[in-house]
Image (cartoon, rainbow, N blue to C red; front, side, top):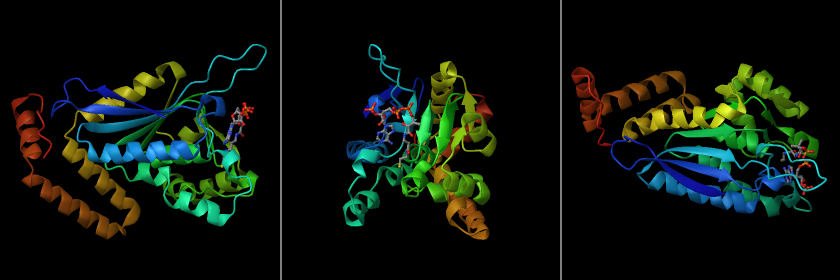
Length: 273
Ligand code: COA
């Protein structure tokens, strides 16, 4: 995987970056092997600890030029966990790997995350996109949880995150059939937030990432934590948690910065606390 920091012009506090991660095994449709997991976990830890990182974008490398006489490989975000690493393994072999995996590492990033999907996002690829806060896909993308075809089920949180995102019946259909879900249907179901042409995908994603990166980095973290509460807490507790976090924001400098900027019709110059 490669990690590139894109500086956000006009970000305040200054020096804010969008951390763009590119899954880089296009020959294998960016299937997630042990090395991909290690790299994603390392980048997730850095996204949490490095104050300059305002937002994370995850994407797949495009396919290489087709070799002479061979058909070109398709575009992919990630075509799942690397199936070649499953053969001959028993539960003791895979348990440590699945107990400390990339899907949870991404889910536990405290800052906003966006999956930019162009092509196949299957199995662990769909799950990686689901671990992000927002999904933007090209119209040639395909989602799915085909693990059932391998005698398996999703193991990267897919059953739970998909269910919360699109509901029980639709999740059951996807998990039990192992079928492919085209981008258009993924949009209708709410698996993806937006669907655009492949040509527009990068600008659409980066524009949103920049917009998010220009907010107070302190407040975006609070917002993410509170919205997450809706997945974890009973409703009345979630409302109380939101209220308490909202009230606590009145003790931050960035609330003064934001309110003053509105009243003075100027740009907010966030301080990040
Ligand atoms: N793990 C390991 N390798 C994978 C892979 C995966 N999940 N998905 C694709 N690949 C590899 C293929 O083995 C092939 O390698 P090769 O060229 O060295 O033989 C290469 O990526 C291209 O894939 P290929 O199957 O030839 O492309 P296709 O266009 O015919 O089909 C898919 C595309 C996505 C439909 C097909 O690759 C597929 O079904 N992949 C597995 C999806 C899956 O079950 N994921 C869940 C895993 S738990």
